[in-house]
Image (cartoon, rainbow, N blue to C red; front, side):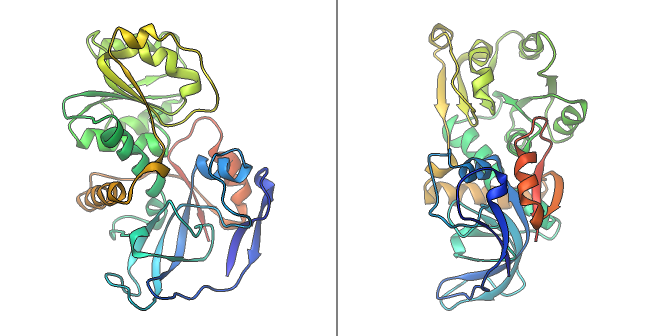
Amino acid sequence: MRSIRVHEFGGPEVMKLEQVADPTPASGQILVRIRAAGVNPVDAYIRSGTYPRKPQLSYTPGFDGAGEVAAVGPNVNGFSIGDRVYIAGPGGPGTYAEYGLYESSQLFTLPARISFGQGASLGVPYATAYRSLFHRAAARPAESVLVHGATGGVGIAAVQLARAHGMFVIGTGGTDEGLKTARAHGAQIVVNHRTPNYTDEIMKATGGRGVDVILEMATHVNLGRDLTLLARSGRVVVIGSRGPIEINPRDAMGRDAAILGMTLFNATQKDLVEIHAAIVAGLSNGTLNPVVRREMPLADAARAHEAVMEAGALGKIVLTP
C-alpha cells in the first residue's frame, strides 16, 4: 500500500510517499481502508520536531481519518466488514495511508449522510472543541462564548457545539467568506477581527457585560485583549499559540477570570468516550456538519502541511488516498 513516511524531523519536504507492506489485523485489531485523512496544524508541529510530543522515527503522520472496515481480526466486537467509520486519535498508526490498523476504541460510526472527507474532519477539531467548551471551560446554556477564529476546523466545530448547547455564540474571522460560514453554522454575531476596534462590536453584542467564555486559537496575539473582553468569572481556553505574549494580570484579577490551558493529548479514555458519544449523536441528528475546505491527493501531503498553517483557514483540509 502507499503511505506517507517521515524519517527525520523537518520541513514539509521530509514527508515521503512510499510503498509499504499491506497490514494484516491481529487479535483485537480492525483494518480500515482509509478514504480520507484529516490534516491538522498539530500534524505539522509534530513533523517539524518542535512539538513536545515526538513520535519515534520513522512514522506515518495523521490522527484523523474516515473509511470502511476492510477486515476484522479475532476478538473484535461491534464492527463488520463494510462499516463506515471515522478514526480519531490520539494514538497510532497514522492516517496518511491507504490502510491502517486500529482498535475499537479509535473507531466510531460514520452516518451515511456524512462524507468521508467530513468524517476525516472530526477527530481532532471536534474533540478539541468539545473538551475546550465542556471539560475545561465548563460552559453552560445561556452563557456567551467568543470563538476567536471561528472559521477553521476547531472554530466551526466550537460554533456548532456551543449553539447546540444553548449558548450565545460570537465568532470572529478575517474574511467575508469565513464570517458567512461561521454565521451559517450557528454564530449569532460575527466580527471581522482585522477591523479596527472590533472589540467594541463584541462588547456591544453582550450589552457591555463581556463574554463568559473565550476559545482562543491565536493566544500569542490575542490573550491580553481577551482578558478585557471577559465578564466576571469569565474563562479563556488556550487552544492554540505560536509564541509568548505579555499580559496585564490585573485584567484577570478584577474579573476573577481564569486562563485555562488545553491539549487533547491530556484527555483520558473516559473523556474520549464522552466526547465521541456526543459527536456521533450530533452527526446522527444533524446538529454537527463538518466543513471540508479542500481535498488534496495523498501525494500532496507536503503542500497540505503548508496550507494548513496559512492564515485565513476555512474548514478542514483532507488528503484522499
